[in-house]
Image (cartoon, rainbow over all chains, first blue to last red; front, side):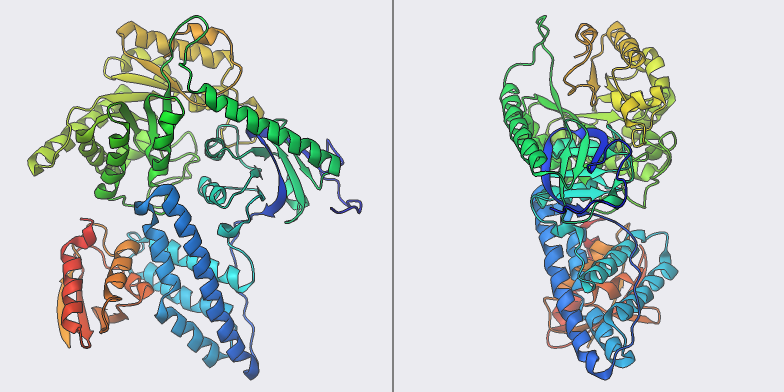
Length: 534
Length: 88
């Protein structure tokens, strides 16, 4: 541990390397920091002496082998976590790394032009990329991205840097921006905690961190500049602080807290075996939210009876590429349905947009108020039809429900229902086994939907209240924004709106449930139980 | 030398994954393979080459195989194109 005084103040509130933030995924972690920066790499060009040429060629070949080994490790992790269908792209990337024609081009270039590998590689990859862009840009964006990824990977290795897949177990990841896919990968490398700067309690990353059990602190000050890789850091997500270069005393205290927290988590897990009943005797049906196929087996272990919401986005993310083929989707869905049978599986149609960017092929990164959920799907019917076809087919193997995200008007609900009817007719004509009669559930995320719940219930089989989005729209707080502390689902206005929705559902006697981070909170007003949401 | 005219039949065209399938299939054969689109020709065993074809649905390609197992390699490729790389 370093003892010299710091030249720059780290944070306004503390002087001992503490950063006040917000815990977004509970737990405590102590470990060496790994700074993760996803920045654009720029190749630099150097002329070589005659004697250096062969050395550079050998260095390139060695780099390629190392990058291959690295990517292969990631591929194995992805296969374990997400199954065989998900690794198609990684396999293709591995083949690109092993492409003999590429190696020859680069080696020839090093020898002919007496240039360093980095510069030659950059020129070669750029040439291929330009050709792809010239030919048919609109239809093949993912090829260009994959090629760029290979270039970045090799550049990093040429410089002796490490790609994100090789983080050591026990490390704490510090990043300004972190994506859910990054964290997924880190979790398999045994990362014990993370701290990031852009996001909120209910941003997608925080949800994934909680699902993976990785303690996470959201720091609003520009902390990454003050940390360097290898320094010991403490991420205390229970208090919402991060400590850089802590005292021996602080390390011991937090190590104890970490062990305590792990023990209490184990007790919580034992409690999940008990029936979910409130003190006044109302039985609450617990449904699990699922992102990854391998979580399905954990559903029963977690005490839930069925899958209340399977977010199909994560199932199709990373590794796969658009257009998501009907066969791959159908296979994925079918596997889940078969495991959950005879209970119900509710598949939420793709909810893209907002902070959930999935790929370049679908509009994403748009404002949270703009193109999201069913709006995106209705404007790109190709994806909607593909997904509905796959789900109707999977519906012939067990109990399936569809959940529509971001419904705002009754008209949208009608439109989706028409697509479902039409798709079922087509499947019938094609003689493909399917279930044409799959109940449609509506997710209440938009205020307008909550206020028109009385109209929506006439056409929906079930209402699901998405409190994360409802809260951010209600309180004007961006779930990926900086005002994390304000983003509270227990604001009386939010609860009032939940009540309105529940009353509309009770009036028509259709079931209603709550989905969101409101549920796992340890404290919520006692008024909650009496609302009879189950 | 065997020469075949093949047509891309899958909806998405030869994007990354079908390109990987083509290269993986051809890796089982000793023959050299070239794929032509118009006047542009690439090595069929180079995934980056196949990706630069930018062959969308309906594109006509010429495949040329040369070597001891040229017949088998060309047939394997034909099968792959006919089944739309298993993703029609």
